Image (cartoon, rainbow, N blue to C red; front, side, top):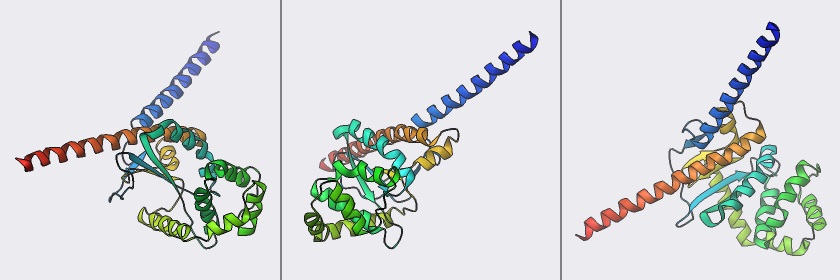
Length: 242
């Protein structure tokens, strides 16, 4: 009887300990700390959005971690609606990796990206399809009812070439050495790796969910920064007018 009570007591202690860890992680994610769940860039990067907080994700289709967080990010962006401006930037880390990046921008220009984005991840990570060459990509697109001639025409256009150069430039400016990595208003950087590094008890799926909480906090922080900056500018303008 005493042994049973002792075991029950130990069980309660263990459950209490685990619960405290979960509560601590949850609190950390909703109130992220600089240097842990996110980092502040030494030099802020310019953004394109006017009047909205801009969230930028650097990713690559063959990255397994990008594949894990993609449905979470997609749902989060949909939930934000018009409150933020969101953009994805495909990266490449070596020769021959630009074919998937070119496909991304080409499908975006054709208005087919929303339809095929998740399918590309599925083809690579679930169906184990190889999409490493233009021929393999064209075969994939054909199976998904994309006109080959139109795709090749758009792919070879000046506009796509400019987007490819712009993406490469942003990859360098933001010093991207791993993906997925997300930036809020060109100032705050976070990633699943940072989230799970600061909360080691989380699984990869849990870190993806936690990442959304960190993004919520950083978007709020960026919005406050914008309001404070606007208020300061207005006050200076009024002083100047006097």
